[in-house]
Image 1 (tube, rainbow, N blue to C red):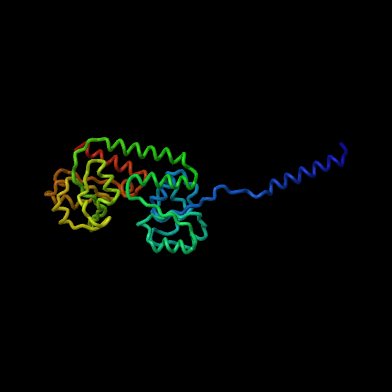
Image 2 (cartoon, one colour):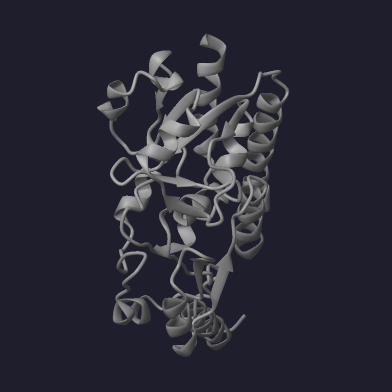
Length: 273
């Protein structure tokens, strides 16, 4: 081989190497998600798509990695300029939770808004599956979904006698939920019947007198702190029998996989009573 031929080979090799180095890198991670509710941020991680999450709202604090993700406002007021800068491919909203005005505004800005809906416990794994399908992380999500479904089924197999339960979301004014809320389904798993099943609204304030009149056998306090007001009303069966159950709201007020822990704690009270 002549010196000229060798030189040509070297030049071509250098050229090919340079071309390969300067070749544009194709980003396969094109799904960029912003969530508009703390529980949706949790569900994104449960779907195995934490790396796709680029923006969250205030109070999104689980898992730990969420705390380092950019905040774009809260559930009722967003920083639209920041959202535009983040350039999400998808924004996950909570139907009946995210204000319609916010959803409409995002759509007018040509964002791809996906409205998720959780009315029953089965909607939790369905939403995880929906996210996983979007991010192609179905195998990761499948394990979490299977564990959730199996755990719920195990608790349902217990033969609990039915007791009336007041679900206390907030102490002053007293706030609760109706039978239409997924929390009512959650307490039924442990043999509790929502004291205010007949509410016409999904959630609403109720008077202390109404609670006293209906005389719950147990009270589930989800206000985030101990509620001593019930000790003043020993005529209420729940207070008389020391059945004031306090569970951290993160384990019962968010429709996420952590609800399993909340149900576990609630059902444990039945084993002791």
